[in-house]
Image (cartoon, rainbow, N blue to C red; front, side):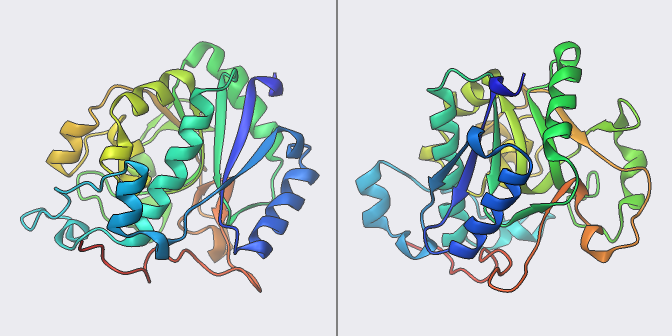
Length: 268
């Protein structure tokens, strides 16, 4: 069954330590032969000239000063645009492939559990469930408020529990590890995200939840079914505190946290 899935990694050429760590993790899990590292775009390349040359356009209705979520009060950042391009390249490659599923990973993702086992169990479960999107790791936001949380106990009872292992997720961020089926990727690409670039953390949840930004909600209408790994209680380790599932982003020596927060606003 694993041959029905391929793994696409959003990977910056300059992040050699990240790539080596992830190569080792995939190799240990027996997943490296099923993986492709996709060359990502660095935030410093995000200029109008570059975007125009590639046929890309930035979502120009992002700023919504009246929105309760303050994230929409400021312009999109160059790092968010670069991230969107990286995920788009993975979606496009998967859409052209013969595979039934794609696992998209960001290059700073980390795990300690048996990732191959989790993938296989999802694929077996999904023969009946028919979900289009599956989170192996995520950060859920508070329902209706779309803000962060201190611990999973604040939101876990708000989600629909399918089994003790899976829930129907609400709007979630931290798109570091997720599976799409062919219906999902074709639905996403049909809406031409390359002509409305933004962080993919906004695009994927729009297809299964009530998006808090009315223009994004209209652009990417809810039409897909999502499933997510979850947990029944808070772990002892702070590393796991906000990430729900079996994967999370982890900084170690030579590996920094995401550069999205430190990137500049795109104002061209």
